[in-house]
Image 1 (cartoon, rainbow, N blue to C red):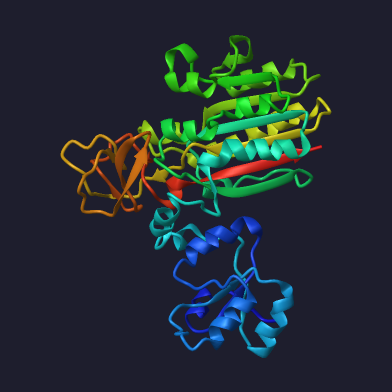
Image 2 (image 1 turned 180 degrees about the horizontal axis):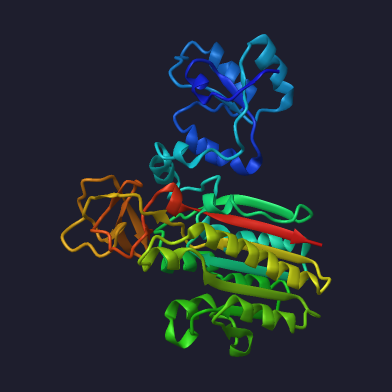
Length: 378
């Protein structure tokens, strides 16, 4: 069976494409203008219909192998050999329309507002001894593709859609959920908790919300990742335990740096930190389940044009209230308030600060797609 790598073939002839499950929905974004039949039966029925007018490219995405013989030999359709995850540039033409379609609906991409429920469901499936939830402040899905982990770890990495304003405050609140992850897991028997934050609860309202159900004795304010390791190295994991960590990702790099920051180095450091903390916990010889995600991604500075919402726009990618703008915008409702949000990667709403190397708050594959990493160790 000949496999081809030229995706432009779909403009000429129906093609078959088979990718890993975690890449299916991103390919649906990349192929937003194509027809993706849900089954061979649907395709044949359409071909036989008197109303059929062939106007869209057709892609048989992840069709059963039982259909391959007829599609490739009888009809002669080619099979495309493409990566499981489409390149980010392939999402640009269609991402805003995809987001707009699914903002008020259930997307097949896991949505950020469903994370707390999803974690509880996955924990409830096998009830590991230790559950850990690590939230990074500012980290995009496509950046997580650079991470590497031991081959003997059971790992599932999938994209998560930030289904709202891509800011720290709203993203973090969506992740913790209502009921919170802590509350959901407490009902499953995870009464021993370890909470770690770089911010003081009594000095930061968001931190207080994220750790609202953590007693003072179960919440640790730390200044470095090493302090987290020190606490957990001494922990007693006799009973079921839940660990919740909120730490900096790439957000701190993009807002206040005189020189262009070395994001690649930080990506590697975060990768190493995840491996270190899991290696530490595995010494307890317990069954472990770890989830890693982020509140929002980062749209890195690439000489974006200025398309102001109004005079004196404070935020580079969104405006509180309704506003006219020369660039493409969408209206997002958060906590009863409306926000006009830039829905493309090419524009910001005000002059860039000289120490500002990235932005978030808008809608783009960089800002609105974050990783959801699920690691299981027996």
